[in-house]
Length: 151
Image (cartoon, rainbow, N blue to C red):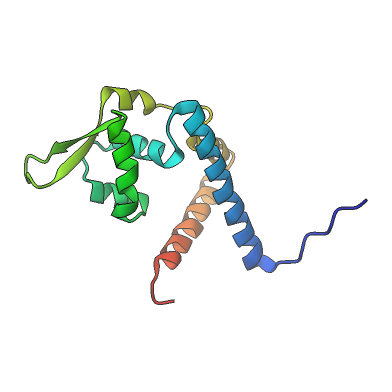
C-alpha cells in the first residue's frame, strides 16, 4: 500500500516544519548526551562557552545564549551542584558573581562525538563560506523576529 502523500505546505510552513524537526532532533540528541556524557545540550553549551569565556556573569551568559536569565538559573544550579562550575565574587563589584569551570567541568569542555556540537560541526564542514553566512543570517533574522514583542 502506498504511503499517504505529504501535504503541500508552501515555503513558509515547509520552513517551519524543518525548524520543528531541527528542534526535535536537538532535544533527542540532548537526551542521549545526558545519558552518554552526563550533561544535556544546554548544559554542555554553558560549559563550552565558559571554557572560552571564563569569569562572565550569569546575565552575560544568558544574553550570549539568547535566553532569559531565569531560564538559565536552573541549568547553572545543576552544573554547580554537580561540581562542574563555580561562582566567584567579582573583584571589581562584590555584589556580582562570575562563573568559572571547575577542573571537572574543564574535562567536559572538549569535543565529543555524540554531542549536538559534533553534528553541527560535521554539517558546517559540508557548506562553503557563503552558505554558512546565509544560514547564519536567516537564523539571526528569525531569532530577532521571534524576540519582537510588537507582533
